[in-house]
Image 1 (cartoon, protein in one colour):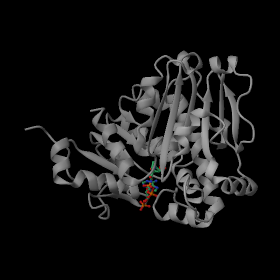
Image 2: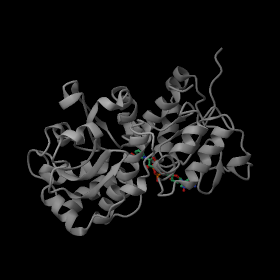
Image 3: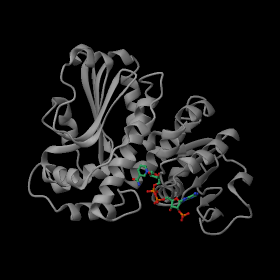
Length: 349
Ligand SMILES: NC(=O)c1ccc[n+]([C@@H]2O[C@H](COP(=O)([O-])OP(=O)(O)OC[C@H]3O[C@@H](n4cnc5c(N)ncnc54)[C@H](OP(=O)(O)O)[C@@H]3O)[C@@H](O)[C@H]2O)c1
């Protein structure tokens, strides 16, 4: 009989609880040869048993035996310190870690790459693109980095949901306040504020620079790793009002223009971008902001993002003659993200 893999949970909120729910279904745990219940659930209040409420007789996480895989789903922070401590401990003790927390991966990318044997023991797919598995798919297209011309990303599902609710491509939209309320209710937004502009700022300023840096570094677009702090920006109330007014034709899009592309293109990026950042790193130009979807034909696949979708468009070859490839999928949502985390483990065991 095949032995069932033991697993643990750190952070039993939306995502952590959903990982537990999925693995607790008999047919899933049987199929995947995993125990139906976690060995432990780490909460902010301490070390709990499989029911996530009964304390276990352990002082701290460091005292626990590390199971085959531990899913880390604590809130994303700017410094990623706590998640990094958890992940390092798991890796140092021979476990596989799978995380949805962006702070640790964006702040400690090089360290974790080394500690995890080049991510052989650490799954990070859920940190960018939620259920879309953007990193995994993009890697296939980016083997020959010098053949890339431009990459465009819509990596914040909450903003896609809000913008498409305010300005649907067809029919009439809702107010910004209503759209943000809906996104919060559906669990797309990071926990915290419910004030519309604060929610939008939290998503745009707190989330997108980290995801962009993780994407850039995970794909190895340069040997010099990109620090997400270089992409920090502030969205003003005027920026948000302006973007909401033009919601039918604006999406928050991040573009990565390659050195080869920049050599040939005089005008890059387009003008009239609302908010965001523009930064050069290792010959690449990184641009983010509420962009007009008609200003680059490659934006069109991202223009239709609705709900909490994420998307990616990659152009390959001189003048994109080797093709333009796109992928769109669910960027947030507990079921999709939890499922990505489970797949991240399965591909590593
Ligand atoms: N929701 C999505 O669709 C989505 C998509 C992609 C990525 N993510 C990422 O996934 C992570 C989890 O998201 P979520 O939506 O599940 O958030 P959440 O509902 O707020 O859950 C996080 C849980 O972590 C626990 N926690 C906080 N600090 C902790 C600590 N130091 N140690 C152990 N547990 C701690 C809290 O539970 P207690 O205080 O009760 O212990 C909290 O319920 C975040 O990093 C988020 O960015 C989420």
